[in-house]
Image (tube, rainbow over all chains, first blue to last red; front, side, top):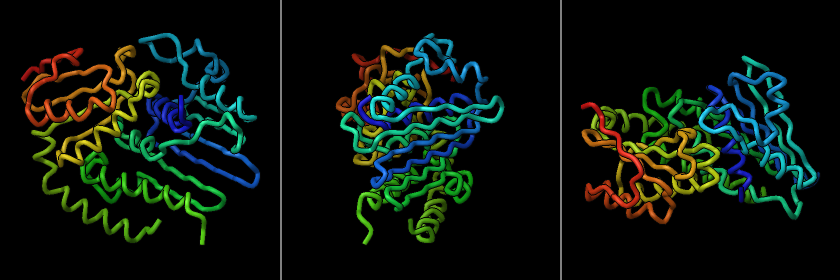
Length: 183
Length: 125
């Protein structure tokens, strides 16, 4: 995939498939130590130790419509190409954490890409799931928790056209501030 | 993020939305985009983005939701359009550049774009 945000979306969709109701997505860009760290933690059904080990094998999947799962192996390969790696920790009944690291300046590192669209895709999921997205670039942080938004909205869904538009502009503005150096 | 301001915005939004939500949920248009690995790799996120932009541009208030893989990976990106009283139409291989025509013909003119249809589900109503 051309953008890391697409790999991230793919892992987030796995979390939704695993029945997660809450997902933490943390992205840390540290230009001084030249690292990019992506952590995705969910409260889904989790995996046995045996499955968590095998899930990086491209011929393993939990789905039944097709028997090859490529998402995590592709993400792991992208990280390994950039002096990083990908780790999975999972406990059945509790959830799964996927951590990926990259050398930030590595020539093969794909750009993060459109994180706003990735967070939108999850916010608009038919299965109601909250995402807590925290993204920092050299100490500047943007944070958004759809649980806070939902609490304010009451019965109005995140997919309501007006809410969706507001959420899109909030994400765009928030991510913009990350790319602007602190004054 | 300026928290106070955004929460005030939200409350205002909620009050506005509350008024028309019933009408929309009962009679509105629902667009569903497949977002499994297969969909994402085929460009479904961009297709979703194009749909959101086009709806906003044309001021159409349709619901848009995402779902996981439904098993027709070769036809991704998959887009379903459901309108009250009409069969649910599934379009296949929907790329962002096809979105303006899809919205114009299906949602505005009310004609199904037959050449892109890969499935049709008649509701029991």
